[in-house]
Length: 277
Image (tube, rainbow, N blue to C red):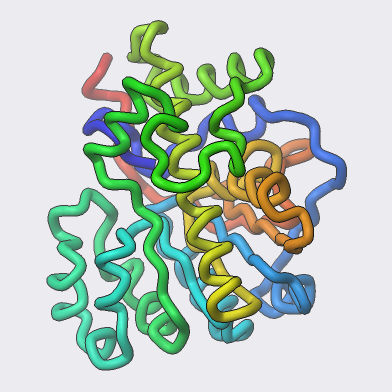
């Protein structure tokens, strides 16, 4: 998720502690082959990540190679940018990075994502990134006011359950180093809801145009089944089957809001909150 510079890319410290109950217990998976077996016949497969963890991207690439999806939706590119992910352009990492404006995008090193883009170019590629000005508008006006599609279809017109609102605001606060004024937390939640809806809508568009399976590549926060993209897909198109994979840097304790999860070695990164202390 990105909105302002203070946003900590890939940080999901509240993932285990702050979640709604889920109906089923997620299972650990060891290999991309394990995932491929679990998702046979599924319409939409959501592959979560911690954005700057190289092993997570390797796992995603392996799953995509095994699944050979009809279409792939990326959180990291806009609908306009997605048209550049073609077999010809994807053959040249530097050219593709330049076409996507990656250096100015704020996402981690393109080298982490390039193998996945190269594999994805075999499928139809969709972009679901919300432009920054639109995200800021959602922050101020609410997701429903700025969503270009059918806001009610994805639940954006409805207020969140009060308990969920509290938990989501707490998650945003912790993800932003406990440095945010309390009165702006709801804006961050609205921006997150907007991004969830954009991903869900793009996946349904891809499914209608190209058939199953459709893969979504996104951060863990959008992949969670309790209030992320899977929940919006269940509301908008309950007939669509969905599988959500979470990728962690340590084994979670207790239930987690995913259909399955995997663990990779953590990245040695600077403390993202150090500058705010």
